[in-house]
Length: 597
Image 1 (cartoon, rainbow, N blue to C red):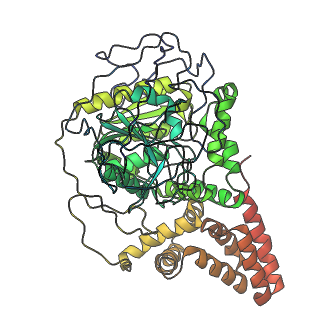
Image 2 (cartoon, rainbow, N blue to C red; image 1 turned 90 degrees about the horizontal axis):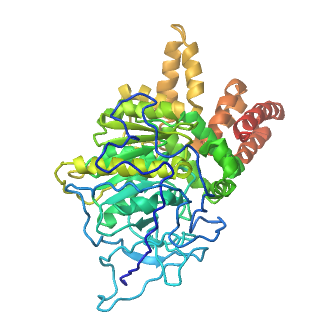
Image 3 (cartoon, one colour; image 1 turned 60 degrees about the vertical axis):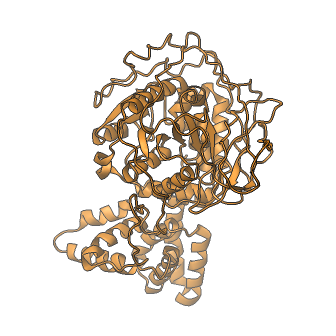
């Protein structure tokens, strides 16, 4: 393998619009003491102010039309801004060794695009070919230049049909994530995670300042930004893939900042692998994202209509109305990011968020945590942020005025300053001893149990893949499966109408039908839905057909497949029964698959 080296021009820092920033030794006004009131954090910078047009995001978002970008990806003109310069992080985990071991590379997946291509040149005295440790080159940050620029990258498999510029494919099990580095090789590593439907470019405006102090590691979700479309079934699996990627690079301890689902990955890592996470920032995140029904219906809409409905409504979910009106180029960039995401991976991420719920575990997050939220975020807003702050012992709240869900895009200067101060302070105060880390071990994936614990000291004893639930477990298992298949709203309605006369029957249904039969491994849920629809039509019990049509959609059947099932029943169960079933199913399908206005 060739050793790759390059020199990337350092971005010129533009002045802060709000005047000189406070001295690094003085308290930073944007981050108050823990558990302060809801209005305690005025973030720096005037809300929503952009004296000059926001430059287009650079390099590699599939389908995103590039515009001319000056070298160094300069900030928009911001008179009076003085970059915040926090002291260098200290502690047993900082800095990382100057040369990070690279994941063995087997194939290049770079595709020609609007930005410069990665290039590597053999160095004198390089060892014979074969997997070996190499320095990780600094990634080009959309800097047009005649000299070759590169992005050190890895992907989830040995082949990547459409990876962003300079990305390379990395092999190994478990699957890894597509990534890039920015910043000095000998600095401590700060991992930054994206939101659902975005790419690592959502953090472009933070990189010039953050990369002066840390080695920034950004990754793409599966099927996002040209990453291979190997869907992850849970937030925990995304965390496992991220750790596998970092393990291959020799990165053991790191800071972590993530937005939305990226924040969920960071919280999961802080719970399951606290020795790996030095400090945490949760941006536009939540201990539970909406309701499971909402995300499962979003998956149904995408499976039926594709990603166009999600792309069309992304700007109103992500940005304030004033920002969207003033920055049409960024609105188009956001729409294109969603459109070019793999639908199957998007649906899988929705399922992962539907199952994500750490409300009862927040007290076990033991790392310093910044909870950052846009004041006008309508997706995961200040209420969810305060829930995180109230539950995490060492957490602080930062409320950013003039920002919605994608605060790093809408108020880049404020978010950069908040992250700089938080990670500098948290890493300085960290005095924990370095903990040796064993090679990462991932348990076999189990679709019905998304959170698979990973051994941290020694591998756990092997257990059978399928263990029948004990009688005491069947009711809890049945409740879980019943909610996943029929939805929380349906189960809550049934429970609300139960009384002393019917509660035993509902317990029987939950324990036997859902805790035993629906929980068996012999058939997948799609097949069970086909059988259930057929049985309901055959028996004439159409009162349950609506609920199970909705369940069939959430279990992965398309409207076309449901139609075929009902046509089959017409032949063997009779035209009148099938006709009545079509009327019921048609109404449900229209309700579930109609995109939001």
